[in-house]
Image (cartoon, rainbow, N blue to C red; front, side, top):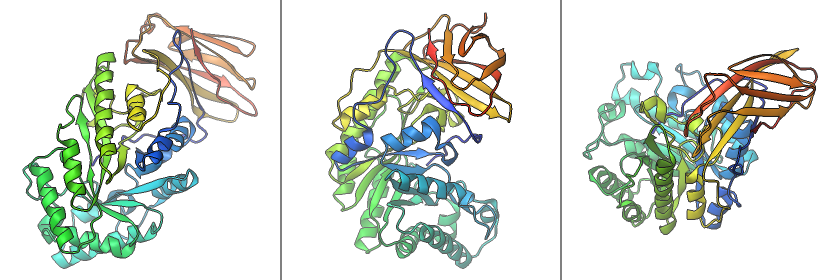
Length: 447
């Protein structure tokens, strides 16, 4: 349904994360989520931003998940911003990453009313022209990735909340037949790919999900290639529908697979331990419902880290919706997912403050770095960050902290105005430094 928040990605970024001031560092479950899911015959996936698939972000995406969904890279406005001129760069990057990490790819999305190129939405088309444009788009994109995409969200968000068809470029120009036509064209381009209809607010039994149910039933009866239903599951804290498992089962009983495709659970900010515990319970409820139904193929989270979530930009005052915090520390929701998939975890710390080191720019003699200190389930009234440079780097200037260096050892303490880091909050300080030859990321210790 939604866009992942995008951001610039500098070449040669250097990132390292560390550690806690009193309790042990937050750490992943004893067994990666992808291995736990595979043991149950399920997918555990994440939406990703291609430019970020490096460093810690790439490490987690590759290690913990067995399926990737491009957040924006395969949408029409991205791949064909100008008619006849294609840009496959990010989509190709995500597919290549997935292949290198033995992951499935979920294609997202072929037919949607949002994120279309302006040449398409501003054009004046006859029904025949519009149909030809749609067929060509589906054939081109699905054909390009034939054999590389496990499942496609072919049609995205076709319904209004009351179960009527949404008024869109496609419905207004082609009628309801755009849906079976799109599925048929996608199947022709890649007969092996699973084809889905995907929508939001269809997680429980309601008017909208019943309209989707009736559509799928009709398509099946007509022999239209439809393999699955995607329940987006952009949820609000404490509001997992009680009829979720029942709803998954009724779709499965039609003879199609069901996937939870875009799971996140947003909360009013700031987060705190009570909200994080409720969020963990919500994630576990969703995973439990999927595990309980044989034809539930799996669950994909819509971004695994709060730093790559669409929520804050779309719902002001809300956020913290994913299983990892902005510093890549697993939250209680992560452990809840692991447990629902049958895993065991070493009891995570009740609270943690972490420091994340990164290089934001680099040139031939120097670089600019920054350290972000964030807390989840804990807080600080003052802080000291220490690390050891491994290649002779030398700090020349710092801001938002007082930094000193003795040989290779660096110590930075808070300024008078930013010593307090509340639960769910963060502070960042930066510095300039010289380097020569190499610039490895150090491990930062909070004290």
